[in-house]
Image (tube, rainbow, N blue to C red):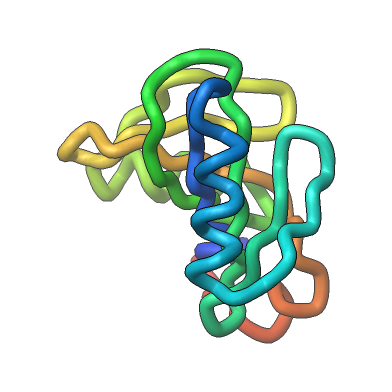
Length: 122
């Protein structure tokens, strides 16, 4: 048994667009951005965090982070639903859905919200 939930929506920007993108999304949410390295929080959508991410390279995009208390089990479950692993990292995996949209499976990042909102899988 493990648990998972969509915990973050990440708005990824190429370096040359990051500052303008961060200010735009903070304005959309009516908040002051809270930077933390390559990430900045720009609010929440219900219990899902909305953050911007400065990419090293690549096109701007939006992706989801699915947080899980057992990353390997969640990756296997999602592969069973038709996703594929694009890259494995030490603590997380980048995956693609059947339409090639990227998302990540990551360890729990949202603490109490995870406990309250996660779905249980067997």
